[in-house]
Length: 309
Image (cartoon, rainbow, N blue to C red; front, side, top):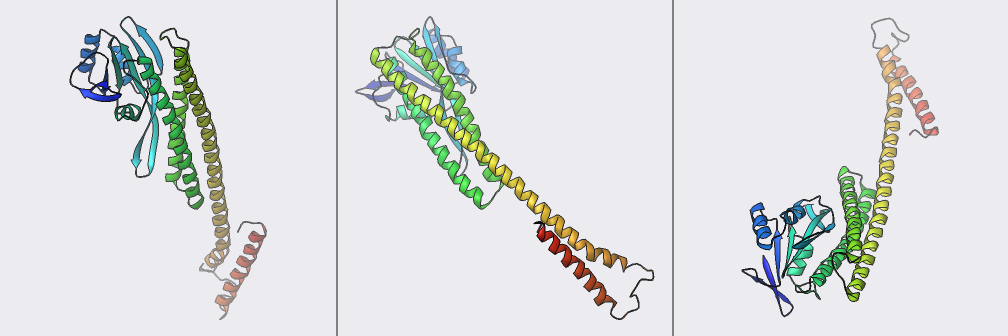
């Protein structure tokens, strides 16, 4: 897709023009080669952001500047179950154009296309870049609050019933927080490098905006660490509760087994084909049952005193 800004609104156009934004979403290698040849940039500038594990960084070549930063995303595996992760987005500054590359449709770029991000300009590349940085950081904060809400909901469900499903949901949230923490820290290092102005020269106002973005980014890192610690401690607590409940059930079953062993043992003895006391008594059955009941009752009383029942 190729977009041009007219009166502050992005419009899709059919061909490349001066001061346009070329948005590539999961392009083929052939498309990448065509763009690289047209703008005389290394093809790695276009292929590297397609790697889901690519780190945030800034790279400069003769004909262009590549900036890769990681943005938050989520997908729904099942209704009500969200998997959070991050994806790299590449921004390439070339003469008279901006190229963005991603291996999937990312929310930050879609909001830009839909006009939800204001105050940017394709002609002003740094303004365009800072707008994406700010929106991405705000998305991290929004998703972190959503993760916290989901965690509280799962905690309430775990208090009612402890199933593997709830624990797996918590594990997925924990993985998402790890991805967020790693990406936010990498983004911070990249923006700090950008702030030093060795590759892109920033005006004083742009430096102030970048400082604000770094503050928001640090807040997101701190929130990620807090939520990650809470989630980890909560999972450890529920694991201990599950283990303790299992021990209680095992003690109960063991006690019941021992109590039932007494009548089983007596019945087994009187089932042998050998002469036994009371073998010819008409009240033998009642007497044997009574003895079994007395011993079982006594053992039950002992186990209750010990807290095993």
